[in-house]
Image (cartoon, rainbow, N blue to C red; front, side, top):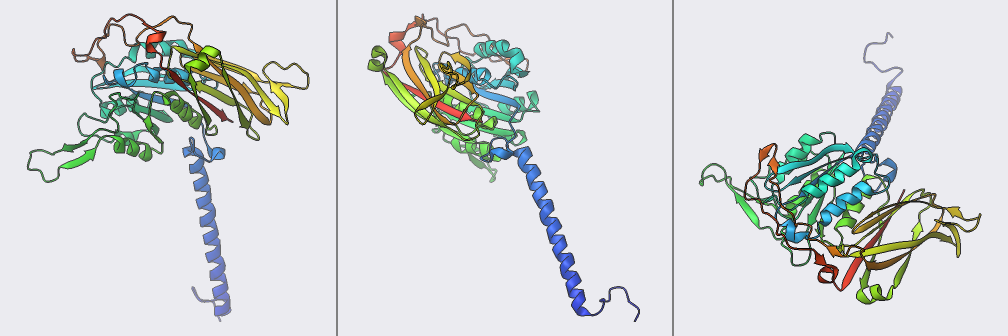
Length: 418
């Protein structure tokens, strides 16, 4: 019998067999194709997820920093400036591109995207000049608008604020932004930080009769949403004690390093006067080649000495910064120091336990001036003069260590490995 189109070959039994084979092949190809797509997505979107194998380090970062008037009390030591300095000076970040804007009532550029190793000194000078808590209110819309305009190629953003959005209705411009890590800064105890305290605001359409009036919380819930919708992370209740450490954790995340192991110490006046040290040990992970040891503290009238860095295995020193035996490996060390941080890059790691010593002492500087003591220049909004009501700082003299330092100093040590 002549085979007709669509007729079974040699009966129904073979028809079902062929149909089953074809169906199985289609399922297999679909599954393989979906795996390929998911793998591509994982490699292109993974900036700092838990899966470090598929993580792609961020090469271009934009920092969006709140410089509204409330920051004068929330961040009296300008630790947000120190945190940005840490990001710039941290060993391993030299070839990163960084851009930054500050915002308050308006947003304005601090510096456009620049390669850190080529423009480091200029970037630090611009930050010191512009981070002054002199920009009025808190406007998220202008912040995201300018950040996206200035650095359209950013791989990730860091958004820091101590207050809820209190400009016009929030425009959701963050949806055009890349992965954004959000810091809800609560400042020091008793400060005016308003992230958690911001009340629900009511927004109406045209005319008071509009039944479609919207209610939206512009405080912490909005900050969480910005982080979630950009695939970033929200860091809430951040204080002066851990602000720099949070910046370092974000940086480690963007560099595809392991989540930093963290140790917290409290030094009191007796520790300082007696020169007492604290000794710590942290395990080196299998396969790690490099590490960053970062130590931060909130008080610029204090200084921290980090010493005796070595790796010990089975009770014996197997790597040191100054090996005394030929059998001991030499650790490669790169240091960066600021008034409230130390960042130490460590190379040539070997398996074992990293040991180090911390000792608190007074800073060499005799007087620590109020960071906000200077005459402010009016800031500009996209080239236009800012309101003339921008505050001017007082001309108070330098403040002695004994007047500014507290009885205890909290110190955070973090170790990230790669």
